[in-house]
Each structure stands twice: as structure tokens, then as C-alpha cells.
Image 1 (cartoon, rainbow, N blue to C red):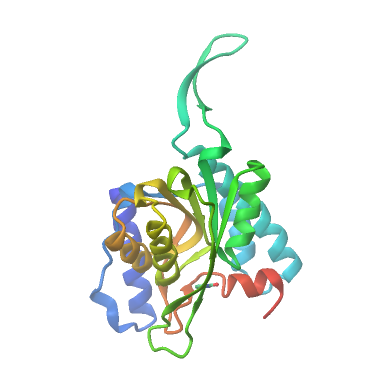
Image 2: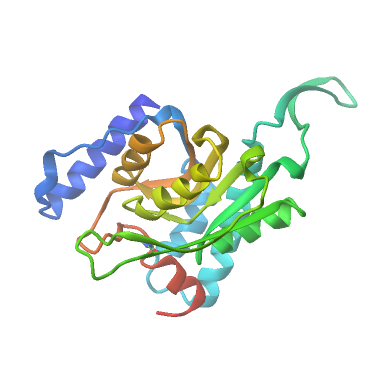
Length: 248
Ligand code: URA
């Protein structure tokens, strides 16, 4: 994990130098112990390459995003606390495997609307009956720091007893995620009870959320290089929701 962190820092600073970014000496400090990155899976590289390609049509973006989210949702559901080690008797021997000992009653998937809904549906397909929460946050495009504003929330009443999968495909500044996590914390959820599940992130966003909620874990497919002046992830995929829903 440490060498991965160093490689990512070098990639980020090289990219910053290449693109003339003034912040070249600013290296983000991310505690990789709480971050799982799935970018070594070949299927993740294949499917996410299609999303990154700017010539990909809305239809192909949707198909590949849904396939990618199914992989991510499977991994997320293997990381919940009710999954324990188990000795499995196979027809020919013994295998040290895993088993989900829990029920969906103590599990909740909360989406940051609208792109988070796509990932939420991927989780719901694999875990039918899972409790669902929704939080709508929008960036205030007029404010200089693109401040996150809460518009709507609907959460299960017993959310404080649940392990929460908080889902949103893009982690840029972390503004929306911090706002959504604050809503969960106000409703009795501890950061340790949250796994943030995401496709594309940047170190700055990871550092920002870890400063506020050091106990929260993150599952991401990729830590990209940096954010541009419009706070979009580079290389990223552009606006995820617009490309998925064809609202570009
Ligand atoms: N949201 C997106 O959809 N894309 C980004 O690059 C950052 C935030």
C-alpha cells in the first residue's frame, strides 16, 4: 500500500508538472490503510477505459458503467462486517473461504443522488430488500469553492443500527461526500459504520474526507491524477451523470 501511495504521488506530481499546475509541490496525504483500490483487476481496466473514452456513446457508457458497477457492488458486499472467514468443506478437501453471516436488515445503501442511484441499483440487485436512503446535494456553481448544498434526505429510521454503503461514482473535492456523511453522523451513524463506494477518486478528495472522518473506509476503482480548475477529475470520465443519462 505504501509503494502504491508513492507511485500515485509521483504520477500526480508528474501530471501537474506536465500540465503546468502551480500546486506542483502539494502532495496529498492519504491513509491507504482505509482505502481499497481495485485498479489491478483487468476487467476494471477494460470497462473503465470505455467510460474514459470521450467518443463512447451514451448507450455504451451506460452498458459499461452498469457492468463496472456490478463488479464494484460485489466487492462492496464482501467488505461488510457480517462477512467472516469460514472453513468450507469442498467435495475433495477444505477451503479457507468467506461467508456472509448477516441479514440485509442491518445493512443500508445510501445514494448521493443522481449518479449514486446507479450504483445503488447495482447493490440492490445483489442484495434485494436492502434498506435504501437518498441524499440530494448539489454543488453551488456560483460559489468560488463550488460549495455543496443539501436539498433533500430520506433515511431509514433505524439507520444508526445499520452498516452503511454510501455510494457516489465520483470523488472530486469531497464536498458532497462530506455533506452526506455529516447527514449520516447527525442521524447516529458512526464513520466506522460507513463504507464509501466509488468509481473514480483523487487524492485531494480522499485527504479531505479522511481529515473529517478518519474512521471511514473507502472502496474505489481508481485514484486519478488531479482535478482541473472546474473541479473535474483528470483524466476521469467528464460528468458521470450527464454521460450516463445523455444530458450532455
Ligand atoms: N463529478 C463528475 O461527474 N465528474 C468529475 O470529474 C467530478 C465530479
